[in-house]
Length: 519
Image (cartoon, rainbow, N blue to C red; front, side):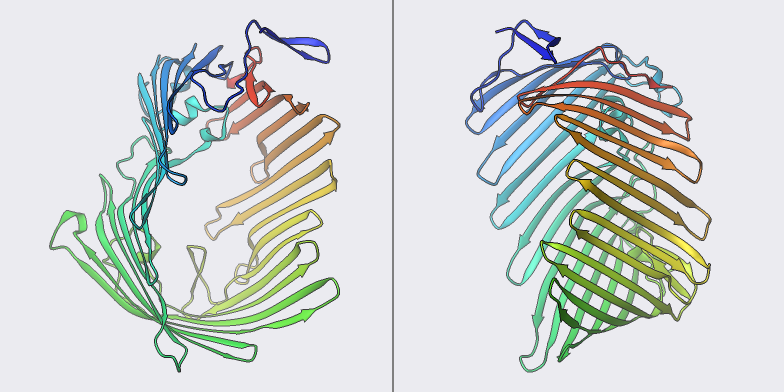
C-alpha cells in the first residue's frame, strides 16, 4: 500500500509503498534511513534482514553518503541459550578522502575505514564470560560517521574480555583490556592491561570466640604499550580485621600487610623491583537512631585513623596511583545524616574534614600540600520529585572553595520542569573549570519541548545548545532537533538541524533539513 503522512491535514511525507511487519522476525528489507548531515547533502542506508534459524540472523546494510563515499555493514546475532548470546558487527567504508573535515588533522586523509563492534555473554563450566569489542580504524572515525550522535564526543573506546569464577570461598577473574585513544593520532603510547588476573579469598572468621577476620587480594597485571615503560606487577594484600561492637559503638581495627613486585621491566628478565609495607587503619563509629512521625533519622559520627609507613618506591615503574603509595598518618572526622521520608523520599548529608600529619593529603587522586584537609560537604535528596545534590570542598589553607558541583531539578508541575547544574573546580595550579548547565522540559497537550544550554562562565562563551520540539500522537510522532557545539580550541562551530518522523516506532529522517557542519 502507499502511504501519505499528514501533519494537521498537511501532507508532509509520501511513500508509494509502505509495509509494517506483523511478525517478530521475517527475512526482508527493513526500513531505510535517509537524510542529510554536516558532511553529506544526501545519505541513505538500506538494511536487509536475513533469518538464519530460530536463534540467529544477519543484517546487511548498504551505506551511501554523497560527500564521504559508500560502505557496507554486516551484523550477526546469535542466541545460544536464555542467558548466553553474541552480537557482532563489521562496518567497512570507502572514504573519498577529499572532505574539508580532514583539514588541520594530524593524519593524511584515509580511504579504507572500518569499525569492528561486538558484545556477548557466555557460560562456560563455572565461568561467566563477558565480551565487549569496539575497534575503529582511526581516531576520527566516530567524529566523521556518528556526527549527529553522542558517539562523536568519545575520547577513547574500550574492548574487554572478562571471565569470572565466583565460588563459595573465592573469586577468580581474568581480564583483557584494550584501550583505543581517540584523542591521539597514535595508540603506541597508550597503556594497556593485557591481561589482568585477580584472585580474592573472601573474608573468613578465624576464631569462633574472637571476631577476627581475614581476606586476601592478589592483582597481577601485565602493563603493556608499544612505546614507553612496561612491566608485570603483582600486588598482594592481606587484610586482618578485628570487629568489635559495644552497644551502638562500633570499632574496626585493620592490619594490612602489602607486598608488590615488578617483573620483566621493559622486557628485561633480570630487571625487577619490590615494595613491602604494613598499613594500619582503625575506624570508630557511633550510630544514633531517631524515629519521628513522618521520617526516620540516622546520625553517624565517625573518626578514622589511617597510617601508611614510608617505603622506598622512587625507582619503581609508574603506571597508576598504586605505584606511589604516599606515607600518611591521617585522622579523618565525618558526620553522616540519613533521613528516610515517607513515599520513598530521602535526604543524605555528609560533612567531613581531617588532619594529615605528614603534610600531604589527597582529593580523589590529586595530592596537595597541607595539614588540614579540605572541609567536605555532600548533600543528596529526592523529595516529592525535587531532586538535588551537591559536592563541595573548602580548602582551609587556600581560603576558598576549590571544587563545587551542585545540581537541582525543580518540577513546577507534572508537565514543566527545570534543571540547573553548576560546576566549579580550581586547583593549586590555577587550572579552573566554571560551567553552568541548564535544561528546560515542558509539555502541552501533544507537544513536548526540551532545551538545554551549557555556558562556560570562566571564558565567557556558550559551549553547547540543544533544542528539540516533538509532536506526539502515541502511534506516531514528529520531532525537530537543533544541535550546536562550539570548540574553543579550533574556533569552529558544529550545527545541525534534524527532522524525524516516528511511525509505529520506526524512525524516518527527512532529507530537506539543512546541517551547516563546521564553520
